Image (tube, rainbow, N blue to C red; front, side):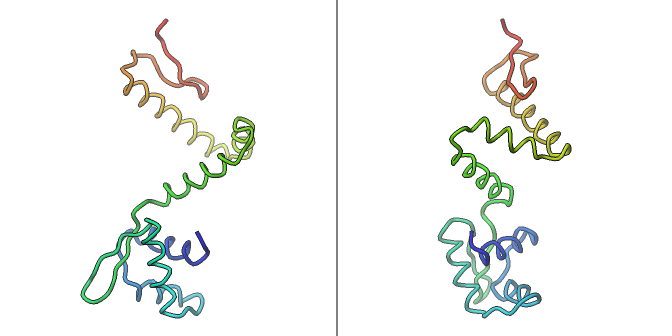
Length: 139
């Protein structure tokens, strides 16, 4: 996303509701001047890219996010990992620079995915994730 696209999306994600162009412009103008006509142009670009849903409220267009900030962030991470020639090494470098709290969150996410994968595939009790690797109690 470009700078203004990200700025618009940030507001809509924070507000967690549809907003008019006027609301977006007025909020941006609190920190820097921006021509009114710029926002509908950029919002339309985001709509065409599939990031915003557009509706009408009286005569005004309203916009709201189609995807969450977390979906956007995950996409950036997938794109960055896709550029790596050695994906395991890139993942290792990424994890090495994570805070202990983030490592804990990643571990919990891997464990949750392991349980979900085991459930989806009809795994036996005791299957799950150990040390970041999906494991099975079946022999």
